[in-house]
Image 1 (cartoon, rainbow, N blue to C red):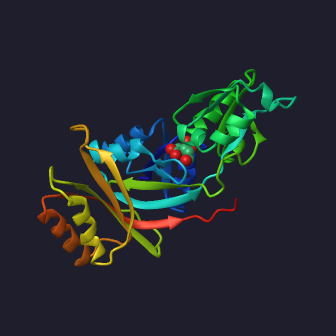
Image 2 (tube, rainbow, N blue to C red):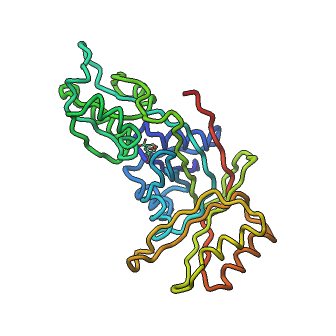
Image 3 (cartoon, rainbow, N blue to C red):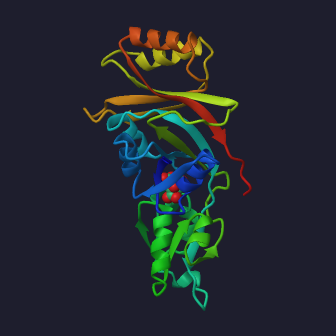
Length: 287
Ligand SMILES: O=C(O)C(=O)C[C@]1(C(=O)O)C=C[C@@H](O)C=C1
């Protein structure tokens, strides 16, 4: 039976692009889900074997719902990561007379996409109301279904091929070097292409009232010359001021260095949980 992969839908999201790229040529059917949480729950409940969700954007930072759900609500390994170049476009329903920017009353999109285009929107559409929705493609679909309304969506080029839409303006993101990292999670192994870069992500909980604990955690990696590429704190949700540290390590899990570092960190009273050890891919931009 063909395996299924859940992605943040509807059709036409950046997440769909990432999912297609990660599963090229494999007999896997892609199924859209309405939210990041629905994707992760579908994998966790074994409705589908795999899921792809956004994890971090180079302009706006971490997608908190992804990280928090992986930490608190489901226990799914990260199996791969893909960084995709992101270009945002202003899309309007196809009509006989083009809609001038000054006539647009409402702009719909995902909060990350709006945040990536703040300057453009403030300068060109200062009077338009902003409406946040679950994905860029949902915004695009909604705008295409209401051609009578002077609305616009911020989203991918792919939407113009899927829905009856046209470009009001192309490439409206505030910074050209805009990337989003997407992660593949799953319940079973998947054959993935080899990659020159591998990563391991861990979650570290510090003991209370231990001065210098974070310093010691970092020291365990530093003296082993293990490269870290991200350290992020997220609330444990148990008390104000209590945090987890999510750490990305630039190598895959091995038998010596990382177990040694984790044992050293645990010896000072920290807890270490592995969120995944996986290949990392990066798609080149043609901005
Ligand atoms: O709405 C989409 O198209 C998504 O795939 C989500 C998402 C995100 O959550 O960051 C993905 C990439 C872009 O950064 C904007 C939105």
